[in-house]
Length: 320
View 1 (cartoon, rainbow, N blue to C red):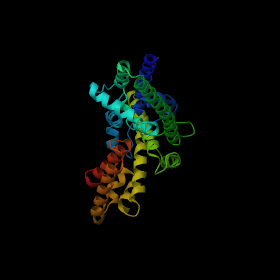
View 2: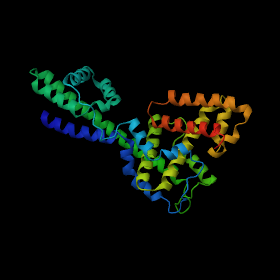
View 3: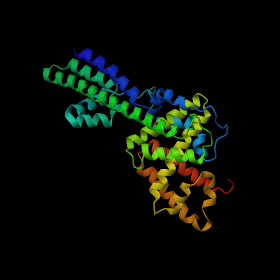
View 4: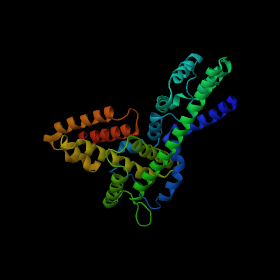
């Protein structure tokens, strides 16, 4: 019975890692629904309101962004020794109930196939029936927690895809097509939809889900040579970043807030000589906040960092 349970656990565990390890993988599937929004009439040029740093990263950076948040399913982790696995097994044996569930949720990538194989091996060698049963229960319990995490992740990812699609759809015309660059009323409609579906201060998981799907969609659109869709989604990322910067600036960074409100091609002209010192200070503070206050390696951190870096380049580069 334990061996059968172990085989089932290994199968489900692999499926769990495959589902949870990258937003991009899920986005590739849900991209089929987004294809109904692909415009038949889009401009071939990249609109100037989309930061060039985001444009340059539409393919390679989008895939690397996904990898920075979580490794791709195909990545092969380093093999672990029996001693390392035993330490993990022993630590989990000491935890029960909610403590064990929290530990698994916090480090779900740690519970790979070799963990379950080691539990099975130790259970097979164990002479004490109570300890043998405890090991079997551990394997079943961890598998149950991982399965619950998968179900929760699936729901969040489905919701994130729907949110992104609603934001994108709000910028389409009555025929469901997009004209790029977006007209001001369409951009305003998308921002309104974003404020409704993903408001400022939204749950971190919700924000990461939507931004992760955006990167996934861009990667798939780039692979399918749908440049118009890539540009459109880049615009959504820039819009989100600008809104976050404005919200965080408030009264403490008025120059930065005013610049973030404008289109990128207007940034340089909006900062007068007398304001440049204040603007530079406010911009550096915003960059530090993006790094320190956002989860390391998160999509939110990446989008904000690229947006602010582009603002710095455009504002202080007089040739642009």
